[in-house]
Length: 349
Ligand SMILES: Nc1ncnc2c1ncn2[C@@H]1O[C@H](COP(=O)(O)OP(=O)(O)OP(=O)(O)O)[C@@H](O)[C@H]1O
Ligand SMILES: [Mg+2]
Image 1 (cartoon, rainbow, N blue to C red):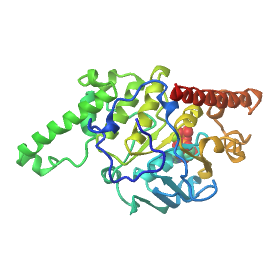
Image 2: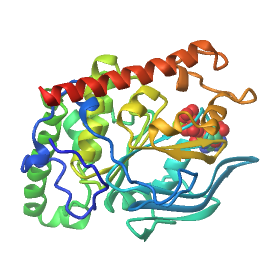
Image 3: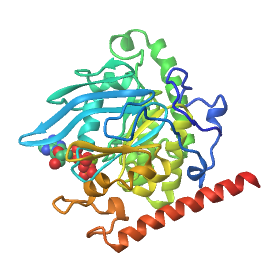
């Protein structure tokens, strides 16, 4: 499968559930994440916080959100690049989820403007934002457990003609549409290997399967920007690789991905671009390899005055950035280089 080496435009995105075209070919579910090249040439200037992007899909200015005396988000300027995978990282309480909520219309900022695909979004409610092509999943999975897997999927479809008055008057319209939605839902469930569970209650799924369902449901509305809040949290390691591949697939299908994640292995493997938040602000930006060695990033995670989840950098080991953490960072780098070398070896053979 081809990969997007450069940011793409959002206009010609294939339907997420469509089996047609090369983009929908099956993707290997193991080690694929290590074999796909990263996008480059994303920023217009140096890797500094707020750097302009060659092709931004989302631009935010002066966005602040206060809770009482606490300023949870204070973002002067940020641009999310189109057609690539951006990771939003930072210690617990940095404001990542709050920023997500603001950008999707789930929460209102105290100040600020932001646009998605050149359309101003301030004041637009979340369901309209989703219809415009910007969808998100939640840190704590919100799959409705007393609905079946298929019913959950159908809830993800937007712009249904049968909504409201028409639904009760012209059943032919919504019956046809219901069928279309159902077959699209089943196609997506098959892609995420959940089709056998279509009629099971979502409550019966494992944590990882719920994450997959969340992602599949988000794709029901053919989004251009998919925002994932901690997609790996609570996922059984056996499912991790396939979840990574599904996220990489979104990019291959032409979508833009913005995700929040504490797992630095995952960030290194799949992100093309990394944005670091600390205490509500953007403190660093750049490609994963550069940004993870940035002093601001190390400080953001490891400053002694902060309540820091050290696992973010060290693989969930608590304490100062001691020898162990440094060794781990070196190990990650080594593993990554080995994976690249292996992938290159495979290509030649
Ligand atoms: N509804 C709220 N009311 C009051 N304070 C809030 C609310 N939501 C978030 N906060 C505070 O805002 C700050 C940012 O929280 P947020 O959840 O955005 O952080 P985060 O970066 O997503 O953290 P984590 O990595 O733990 O998910 C925290 O100090 C948090 O306690
Ligand atoms: Mg959060």
